[in-house]
Length: 561
Image 1: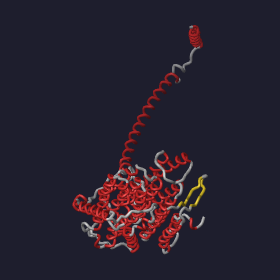
Image 2: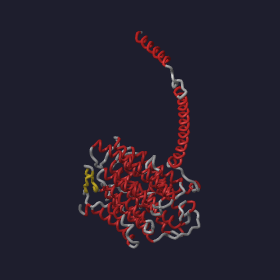
Image 3: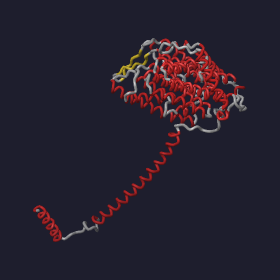
């Protein structure tokens, strides 16, 4: 193996184990250097290069490089750098180590050339992300980590079962495009959709991510769902079912985010919403749509991390996360508010931001395929995104009423991370050709046409007007929004308790009835076979001769007849 073909993700994974043992002065340098070294390796590893490893008579392709995999590996490495910069103040070394294992395994997923390698890195991601969540150290985080781990083990079990069936059916393990027309591929798709936070198991994301630390949520937002999008683009392009799944995710995320009071749960639901756009693009399946899904995943990681950095900065400086406890922070946290607004504009696809040049490719793909209804749905959804993430988050956190809180902007490293990703949001919006050059297919799309600009600005203006007209309805109260996780968090324990009581009572009655009948049987046997029983008495020889004679006579008579 040459240095040029060394798996880039392993730089982060192996480097993660160095973080706990190096000194406090060297650790920040290592946190920043490892992602940059990974990014350098991702950029320079030759396309088509592979690292074969034999396992159980199968040749695993640890690294298989092409344009799509390199695109996702680049953004995963950038995210590891910005997340590490933001988290330099994090005192829990476990979180930083787990985050690097998590991000390194995501890079491993992007370069996996076979299904077994994909699954191995997939499960390392689940373990790393669970530890990131668990390292927050609170009771809520511990419980959420347990639920998170169980959900992802379920998804991993679906994928592994599908891989076993796939190997049995085809005899191969190559990770290529497939159709969910068999049990094997359907199970693999189901396992991937669990990580994508697709229905009906979407609520794990909003349940878990907001319970992580101020920096842990930034890492969690970037890798799991976007690695799932990558696998969908690679493995299931053009699967029509994904159009319906994606549309459901879009509106599910919008509605739940509009109901939320917790600023980080608002942004968590908006992850589901945005991934829904990507899943829809994969379902359309044209080159334009797949380019759009990949570009939007790239842009989404940046602006979503920026939004969560802004929210994490507020949490770090105030200790509060509910919209009802916040407001007026723009007065003392101007940089955090400015960067949060940049992220909000980008997620809303405002012109001259990264979201505008990526999400619009998916809508254009729907128009190119004459899917008029889907195009209208995506336009309506874009307005909904502006309502919940573009306006609601910055308005209730930084403006609205004055909460009386006067925290300063966060430490320099957190400010620098936000400025870096703000620059990316604006830079990709102004010069989209650099992003388009990284996409898997040739791009002939021009986002800045007069009609597109006019339509987008009209849509955003109308959505903004609707928000302020409905502001009394938008104001949050100290309430908790119920989601489908209610069924396994609240309903399931109650159902199990009822079943336990019913089964316990049935068991008690069954035992009582069985023992009662057994006692009756024993009494009967004792009556006839006990010491004083009729069959236990001593008989005279003459009476026994008479009995034998009668029995013999009956036998002879029966034989004669």
